Length: 326
Image 1 (cartoon, rainbow, N blue to C red):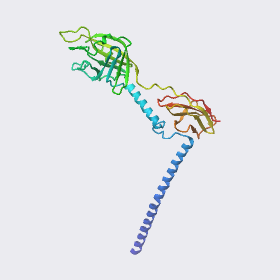
Image 2: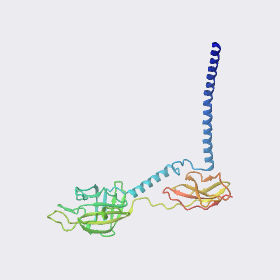
Image 3: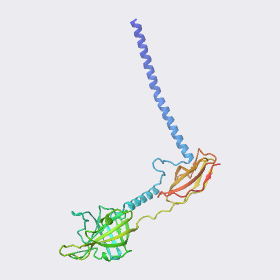
Image 4: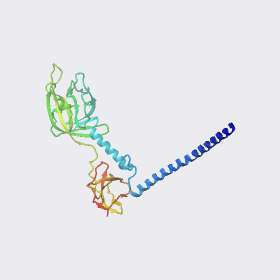
């Protein structure tokens, strides 16, 4: 009896081992079949996108840019950034007064007043405020004179409304300001908020001492403030809105159009309105270097389409002519 039970037990163990080996041998085959199936689906999707004219690699960016266009777009973005943030000034010129000198950053004195450079021929920029050309009030200050004689802003009191002040950074980027007004204040009654506070315009305020020198206190009693506003800046000309695509056509589910001859074009947007829809919706983005066509596998009679052009400044054209599926 014991011998028979032992034979039965060994038989079951052998069957288990054989079954496990068969399963283990079959598992890679199933994994391989799954992998092959996934690959086929991926290839199929790519083929379908290629046949339909769909844009490629739009997961992160709407349009794929060639290197030359990408470089131009980057340069434009940097210019826009400088325009918004302003420049760190390194030089100031007032042509009408023959002033051309360096600018250094300054902060506050121990008593809370804006510092002024020790050198009388250098101008200070208040670096705790906004940069020059940004929205707000950027402030420059300089001496009117010294023991040796006239300083950099000795004749600033003679500046006239409409005259220009040009500020440049180390890269040569310029910001030009026009004098709007000038006013003198007692040093303890100057409107701090107006001079240093926030503004939705791009101002540059230039300060120096003025009035009759007090020999007992060794200071000037008043402050002259020249108020200016940004009028121009070194930057690329603003791009115009691009032209809309032409020769838009529909043929058996495929929408095609002619490219716009403009080297700033990033791509095109395709809009669709179903026969029963009330408004158009964007269904695809096509990069400038891609084929100017799109196959809509869901097209139905009565569907309408139009195309727009988009440039590197993100400006979008007016809609092209509308075509209808028949």
